[in-house]
Image 1 (spheres, helix red, strand yellow):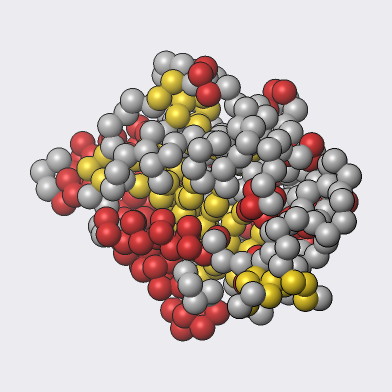
Image 2 (cartoon, protein in one colour):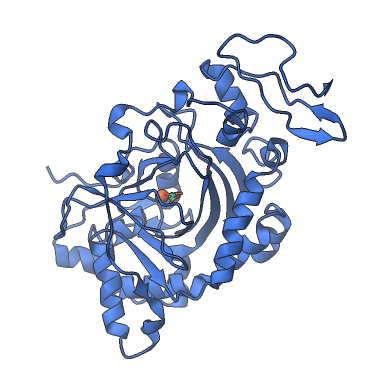
Length: 399
Ligand SMILES: O=C(O)CCC(=O)C(=O)O
Ligand SMILES: [Fe+2]
């Protein structure tokens, strides 16, 4: 329907009735995607945010002053900014892998994977200019009118490789996450260039390509330490599947009540994460490691030009629990929207996964059972984020 633009709703609304700004302007005529929903009515909120693809961004653009009830986390999940300290570890300089300090750098990588499961790297081979373009591209993409993004909702996406969405599994969550995202799965260059959204495809593909050697080097170091040599024939078994996401965390009027992403570990092998300068990524120091601050949340501080690396569940399983896929979460902020761009690497869906035999032998037993990766994926995406529960799918209980 076309309406003449009027700055006020035509009908006087009830007090919790929020008017939506016009989505598209054409000359002086504005197109309204729908009448304003009540954000405190769960089904109209769900329809507006999820079904119609307006996302959290759409709620914020409507000018709310308090987060809708559906986004208010249970008290235990709310993030107290003041109680977390910063992770002080310096970033690992990957250029030194090529020189006399090779072994020392491998030790740093292994030690980080065995303790926090998170570390930062510099001189990683991804051009710093590209990192800036990626962040700008993410902002530009999420500034598009809702209908331009909504074409990639999973129910209607023209490509099985591309998915635009919000929160994690909205249908299953007790409280929604304050995040919109676009997800681009990689099969080959041609399909990426044809099917990924034109606004993001070039920089996303360059990110994937320029980071490949680093991922390989990191994996070589981590697997080498487990007595597993990484040659070309094994690459697909460990990182045959790759996906680039762009996450958008709009400004939030009540950051203390919400989360950008709830507690979770990543499902795959290694995640390469580009975060912007805003901060708010927290990692829980595992309880079972020789480290200070066990069980506490530490913030991974933004370092210009650096990338964040974290261990995923598969690497924890192959290493029979030696490497930690650490639990992490993201805070929201009231002043600026935040973007992050992760590359998720994982085995191919058909791959069988189990702890590496040489590690099991050393440890005197397997802590995880063998499974096909696609089954793990189904379990992971079939449940709301809940800390490290995802690993229970494969865990062998010792009692
Ligand atoms: O935005 C971030 O810093 C982290 C996002 C994240 O954990 C994820 O996408 O899995
Ligand atoms: Fe994550």
